[in-house]
Image (cartoon, rainbow, N blue to C red; front, side):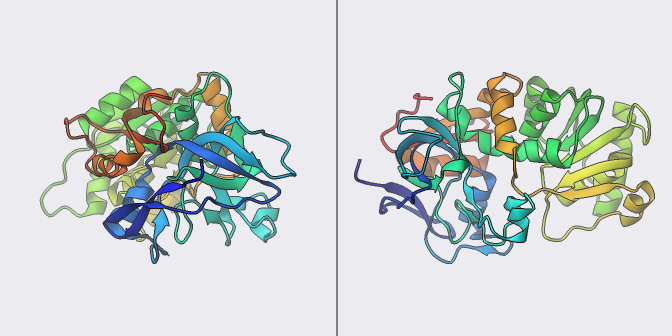
Length: 373
């Protein structure tokens, strides 16, 4: 192939299909022909808002970063893969020289080049160039579609295993039954959590979570007129304790809370729910009111989660290939490359035109059949 069709975000609420130059690749790089790409919430957020925090879309940018494909060409120093290999792509190139990189926290590199994060292009093209140590061979029992979902699975691994330090006898409560929240539940179950509690306000999502990985579900009550968010969160936490028999200490306590919703009341409620000496992991809105006195009295370990780091992709693939995390049920919708606009619209609405609820949409690469998974 000599062309590189790409799906480009021009500005807020404006996208187009463009022919882009085929990316160059160095001696230690790999040129991957992208076959499958999942749509992430961040892709949609850039489309609808034009920014995420300090990352602002100021020039056209190719979308997409949850991808897998086939090695097309390799640099002269590359030994770990060969053309034709099926691979998952870890889409963030760090500088490898700064203090964070040298400390093994490369995901916090100040000079990170991350796919589809302004100003860097993403993976919704025919080709994408990446250092060879940031691609991962897919086992024979994993499809390219499975490989595309290793990116959000690595996010879940980072939150549950690396930051949450989940143990087999732990109970975990997860707010938000979107793709990342569901994968956090699946990873927690795979690592032996004795109880996995799913929390969401949408009954259909709770139903899916229960069939997928959760052992228990909780639908928070509706807010009362004039009730402050913090008062509501405290009331909701008390209702959750009563309904699920959750205590503040001991065997019936929640060891780990993960917020995958970003909602202020979810964060607050999780902080009330987590046990004394427990751990809270999350990444929310830019400004959130938190019950600091509760955190202090319980000496909660509060951790933010940003992408993934060393070992997270490898563990994600190991769990998936061993059948401990099944990502296949996550993909509810599949689209051709030329239908990317429809795919993004369905993801924004949370359902397709036929009314079917959407959890994860996957877009095939140019000239790739939708059912070729």
